[in-house]
Image (cartoon, rainbow, N blue to C red; front, side, top):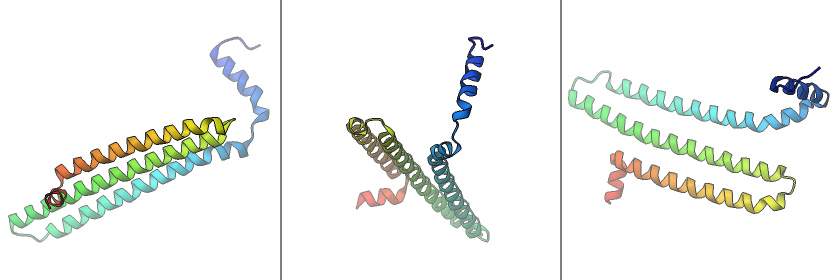
Amino acid sequence: MFKNTPFEAIAKTMSDAAPKFNADAMQDAIKPVQDNLKVWADLAQNQAKEAQDAMAETMASIKDIKDPQAAFDIMKASAEAGMAMFAKNLKDATSLSFGQFHSAVDAIEKAHPVPEAFASVAKNIKAAAASAENVIETAMDKGASTVTPAAKAKKAR
């Protein structure tokens, strides 16, 4: 009844595998993905709240100002704070990404049929990721120091 077309081959595979389906095993497999997504959602929500609070604070402080120079100074300080917040948020996202990458490598090692054989590969992959993370962090620090006057002042000391 089944012909050898891709759709029918998939349908046959699914119908053959349906009796073997284990909902608990599927839930266990999906749980790490759900956890990772929740951590990302929490990070995004916290970062959005920080940005909203900073904007509200800026608007409140500028609301009753009559002097244009004072308004300019507040906007300048707000922009500098925004750049610092952006750099922090980028670092947090990068850290989370690399942390989840390391966890994924650990999970692969744990699930590998011969974990001892994969251990050295996992170690090298993690070392390469740590090196990449350090390079990215250094680049972000250098970028932030060229933009943020507070960082420039620290370097001048």
